[in-house]
Image (cartoon, rainbow, N blue to C red; front, side, top):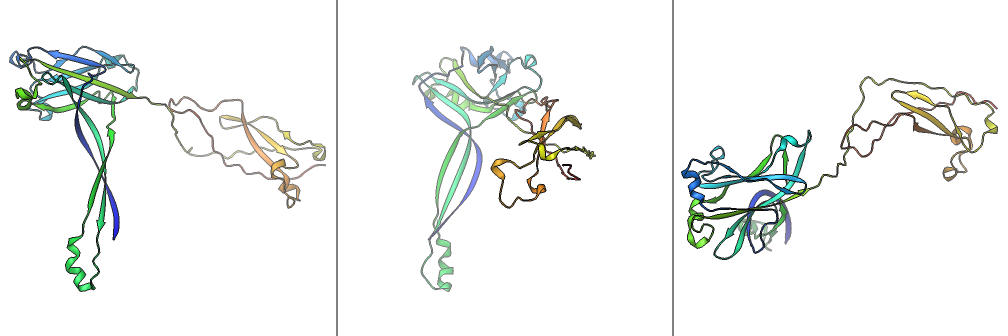
Length: 302
């Protein structure tokens, strides 16, 4: 018997029943179907605040014609007044929509879920000779064990400032009295939003073109009289200021009996000083500068 596996991912809409009302917004339409009868094809809710952002619900009573939402109710969550937000803004959020069941006094919760399913295939090999096994090879057995990772995170930004469902619920299901979502032409819709905070940690790597080769010479006198370490004068290479740190006898923790020659005992270390590194990229918390350093000992004066 042998077991192997494969991963398949897909986006799913999941629903569940919940007693608790939505944390952030709830709105009631007392004459829902009169909206479309009076030519109101789209309705925007009042603004509400959640996680430092202002949001609104956009509802299409007869469906969003732009995304083939006919015979359904389309509901979207959108950033409100995005013109007041700073340039380059974005909000990564998970959200759920709620439909109140007025007969059962609970809520139908609809959310966008990212589903990752791992399929385990269990193959059963039969102890027959090869010719007979070929005849039975089609009877291999397999088992499937799905697992869900949870809610889908949606990125709200200038180009895409709303997310939702073009087919939240069909008019047929809504009008079915036993479902309890539409009573006396009234319907209650809610929303819950949770923002995934961006920590602003990242990294940008770039290579300079037309790299300039620089040379700096440091002449040292009375080498034998130097102490444990010696620091050169400051010099400039590119946009940065440098110093050379010299350990005439090597760094204590790296000294070995084999390091007999002066060249092996010389250890040069570069230090950045003066001008700071560039920090104008907003998502960089740290900046590292990588350089290629070649050290040559021309002569040593005692």
